Image (cartoon, rainbow over all chains, first blue to last red; front, top):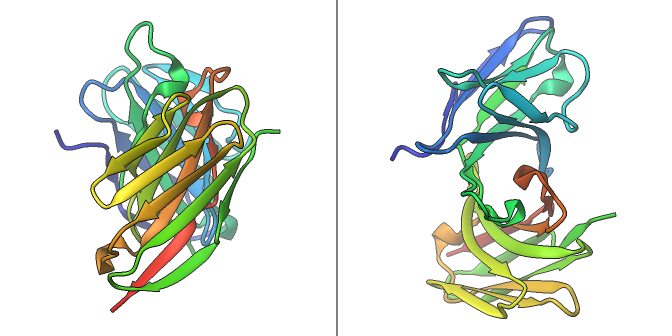
Length: 119
Length: 115
């Protein structure tokens, strides 16, 4: 079990370009979460997805940011027209919530993160 | 408003010494509390998860305590090693939340273990 796989690990973009970050959840996990971590700050929730559905995107900026988790393939966090303030580490986590189990009791497994630098 | 406060913000100790990290929360109704270890440049890794009825849980040299009455938790590290240098994050979940990812995260305590 390879765990949660994120790529690229490091990405450099110039202002105005697009950034695409990919996340493959743990085998058997159908819930994916994206977080942003600015330097010297804690993890901030962005979006929660299940296969082909966005469940909660309350933490994601309304403009330039989008996320998807298609039926086949990894989840993708897309940032259009990047600005310097987008420079951060973006973490993906996944979970499996067995039927009948309380959602809040679920433990997230995190990937190693993708570090975006905007020049 | 649900909040998680961790202290100290940073801590430096000598190798072999013990230390205790604190986590105070206002999340209600409480479901569980988790401690994560985040090495520099890596993702967080779960150390312990504690529910309402649990007071103490150990994972090797890490021991977490929970006082649900005072809404406090601590993470005690025994006989610290250089590899313990990391950020330790306290995460608290509410029974009302329908999104496991939207638990309340503390900002972490950065621990540095020096030889």
